[in-house]
Amino acid sequence: METAMTKRKKPNTEAAPAIGDRLLTLREAADMLRLSTRTMREYVQRGEIEGRIIGGRWRFRRVDLDAFFANAPRNWDFAGKNNQGD
Image (cartoon, rainbow, N blue to C red; front, side, top):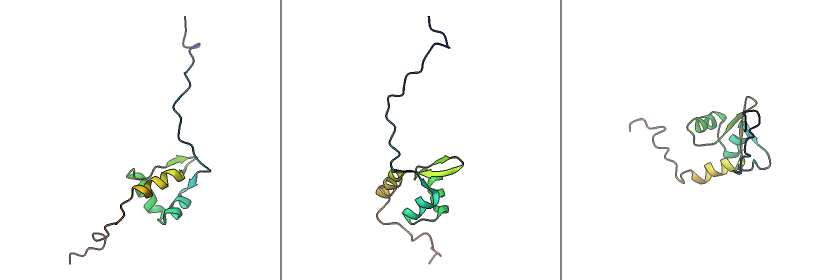
């Protein structure tokens, strides 16, 4: 008979994506995409860029930045940004 003390967790057999060479800081990730850190945070909040807070600091994987870039529209619509109603 197994008790709570003798039960063992089954190892997670799902392979997590590899981190790669190293994690990038917020500044490094923003520089890589030629964005401000403020814009990077906005994309993360909207769920457009994957990021994690580790040790109280944002960290990003290069593969997630590559995915964001690959899925970004080819032609950004900037017409509304400075639209003065002309």
